[in-house]
Image (cartoon, rainbow, N blue to C red; front, side):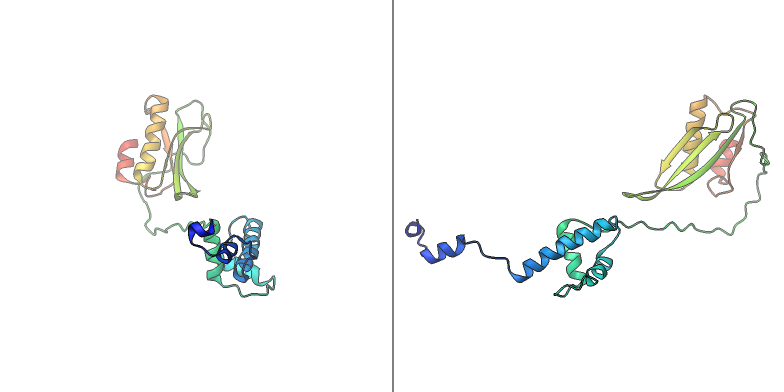
Length: 195
């Protein structure tokens, strides 16, 4: 076969012989094992900088840089889970319109007498912060309308209200809708819908 391929016997045996891994490959093999261990012990929230600090505590016989750890993590297909903290924007504007018709009296005698509405912040790994607007009937303490969106704007609360009206058939005349004084609920579009 060597004659047909014009290859020397020594080259053939050199290519087919199992040789031990080089020093760099051995080091990377150790690093891969330790990086996976540290990553899973910390629920996948550690990135390259923190994993490197943990590796330095092991007193390995070779140097470990943050870049090397990041490259190995990339080759393994792992990365830290980053959850951005929610920082609400503060508004100094005071809403003077509307009055508190509910006056902390949450009791009702029948359905469609008092509804409450609010927005909840929900963190989703794929999309980051998302928002859930919901409308609850105080008579049954059940959510009768809701809407989920990536944007916290007036359309979010309007769609939740529309879903509540759709669930109950119509918007009752003697209904009290209570919400906080957020900009979505004090907007012209929302006020026009509920008044």
